[in-house]
Image (tube, rainbow, N blue to C red; front, side):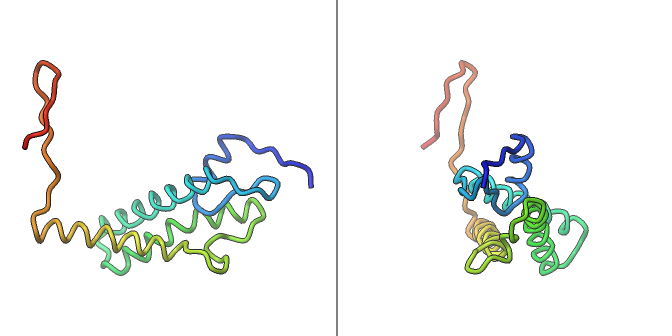
Length: 132
């Protein structure tokens, strides 16, 4: 099979849509990272839109999952691949749900126990310090 050449911008768009892009059947680890970040970004975006529309919590989770996975499905179909969400043994849509559970648990813990990060002060002279 001859090496296939893809447009760099097109590959970047496909990579952030979810799933996996392969060229000459060699997986690209960098694109896998972009894929994971894109899946997270689109899932959170879909969830936030559903939340802003006043949807119930379970609907927000489901719509966020579908939003995250759908970009990968479209990309995989256009590149003649089996969609990653359908591949055996792959954590894909379930990773989105697990990620949302972790974010929700962390946020609820922060609210319950008033968890905060350290403050950061910037002085006028341009120096900074982290308060003790």
